[in-house]
Image 1 (tube, rainbow, N blue to C red):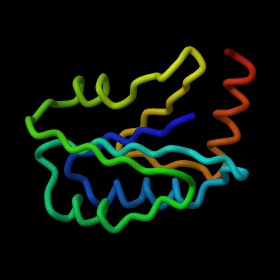
Image 2 (image 1 turned 90 degrees about the vertical axis):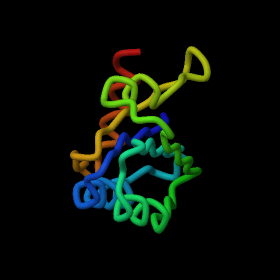
Image 3 (image 1 turned 90 degrees about the horizontal axis):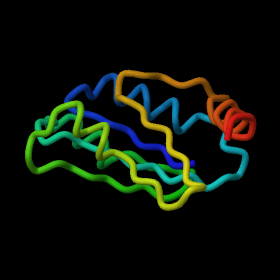
Length: 112
């Protein structure tokens, strides 16, 4: 499962989301994190992302060079690599339980 975060210019709520992601239990899994930044993101948001360390796998940052808005941000935020690829798309105004990953994995096992 890959995690994709969509953000614009809300550094406070983005910081809360990133902190909850870092504190989550991934049970030894390596999880790719992709952060998609809108072109209009301000310096506080950019600094927060530049200083963020993702300890649970690889991290990729994508910043739009042309303003796209919410619909393109969601549509372009994650691309499946195969029929067995799964992604979790998060906006920057959510906070996650430390057990969200276990719930997501159990949901995949139940419904896929």
